[in-house]
Length: 75
Image (cartoon, rainbow, N blue to C red; front, top):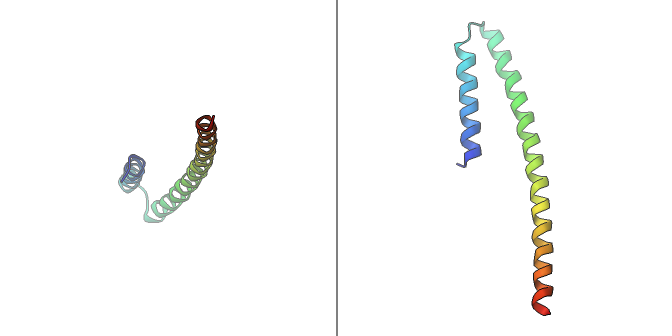
């Protein structure tokens, strides 16, 4: 598991522990858990979109560098 996975796991564990220790009714707690789960799902999806964009940029840079090196070798 990478560092990001550990951070996400730790955050989720802290969130659940905090909600379980809060003095709320079961119904309120379940709603809070549901709301937070949707919030974190959205954040995770946003993060994945950023990773995809970054991956595309890196791939373009690698292709361009490869072309540049190939031209330099030919010369």
